[in-house]
Image (tube, rainbow, N blue to C red; front, top):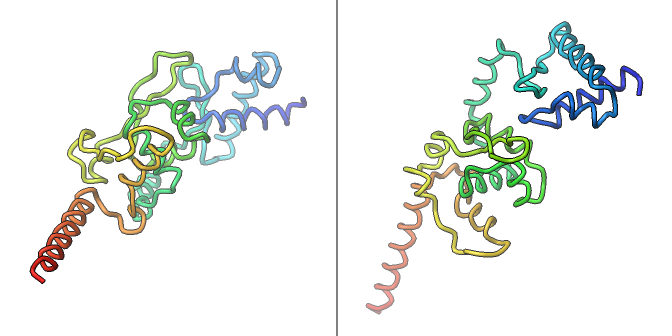
Length: 219
């Protein structure tokens, strides 16, 4: 593998490694290249991103290399995070958030085992929207990140606490996640209902049914 290709592959490896990052040792094993060579290439990548004034950086944290943004750009990211469009959540993000809400603290791998697909992008979006956050590290190989919901999550859905999460009617089986997702996020994208709004609607429907029953009985 020539130097240019090696640099490109390593950049891709850092990208797909997400928040957990990748160690130089692991990267060297993947590309089947000497460890010192890999370290030199990663350092070269770091310098190149700075020299070209790119919007991303490669940083080494606790022995792992990961992608991050430029610190001085933080005000723009905050503006995006709190813009009106931040409320829009994809189905993948809704499902991921539902799993975290009910199973927290939970690792990315555990989330992916439940959903059956990769969860890197939904997790990244949920962290950016301040709906989930790191809750420490699991006592397992590689010390993976544990995710849990934030105070903003409670505010967003009008919940007093995690204990206020609605209980699904399906207790067992493959439909449990779908039921939980539906109960927690039904119509949230279209109308941005909070759980209190949903409770009020249910109460209103119940009152309407009672009035109808009384009317039928009187007739």
